Length: 135
View 1: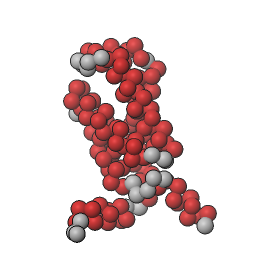
View 2: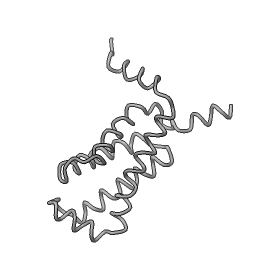
View 3: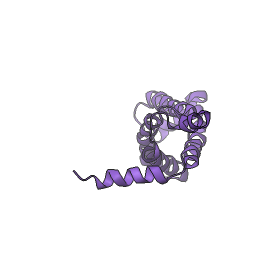
View 4: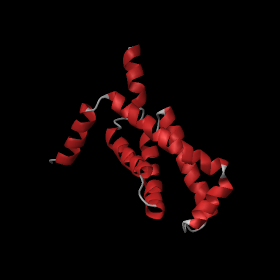
């Protein structure tokens, strides 16, 4: 059975240098870490903001989105569970785009997470360069 789309994705994965994957992870960490921590540190103002833009159950949604973002940052920083981090960031960014509007940060995180889904080759892809250097 022919799988042209899967074969194309596999060829993209093999042709992209490892530093692109690492750079994409670091960019996503840099873009998501501040808003994630601000939801935790300034909970009251985050609830007020969510209420002002019309999100239902703002107190619960601040907790949910904050946990998802903090968890994604931790997973991306450690380098394990990158697909889970990317998949969890996509709906958060879609909601942010729908309620707040598209801006460069939301779109960058959205497309970066989708790119990371395409580029991730293994569960622990970040550790492969270390394993190769150690023998």
